[in-house]
Image 1 (tube, rainbow, N blue to C red):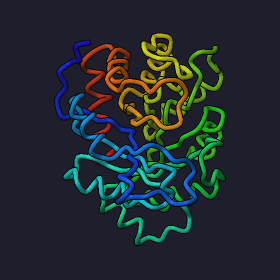
Image 2: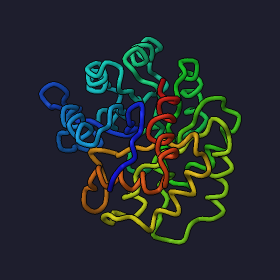
Image 3: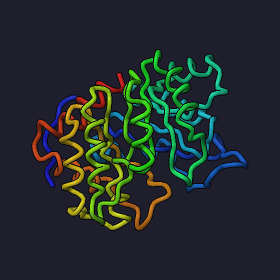
Image 4: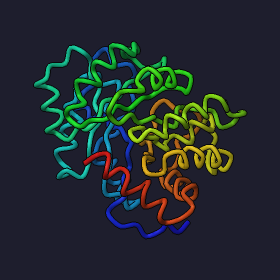
Length: 275
């Protein structure tokens, strides 16, 4: 498809990097062992798609070792940002190092297959520690896991980003009461939605993902000035075939429907969140 001409540089707000292994090996206790996917490969993919900015989300398999992420950010002259994995034991000096290296958020995993603390009270303490840095908190989990956290943190004065559209199943009847609760939270001026992972919503079905369009558009309409997009490259821990990143971008553009909305989701909104 012909993508609209957008100004300011497109953003891919969800990627991971792995390796190169000789420089950034995985720990012996890694939660999973993916194929190498170094920053050079990500930059090549972004160049093909005309993407000039990106966000590196710390891979769970690297645990608290952010050396690969920080080295990759340092090579991009500030065009890329990072999202870290932080636990309560991390000292303030390390948080400062992460911030100076380009990190602007912390990710909390509520999915059962990923390691990490899932206690909302303890995680809130971490969120409150990073809030003065201007960071956001990225909440990764299924809708039923995320909603109680959003309820408990209703008064938390910092951006909360819902990862991968709350991992809903677009192949089944929607959880209408849960979706309405999510929409009410997204009306809050500091609550964001990441329109990533449509292949996950479609349970690994290959493109085109037309059946997911109405659900994605509904989430976009709930927070059009606080919606962002990410490819999820290189697509770890997925069902089905690895999706084509160009097709993922084209799907998002189709959901946006017009150049002004695409400009907001792909350029203006992420620039506001990450700078």
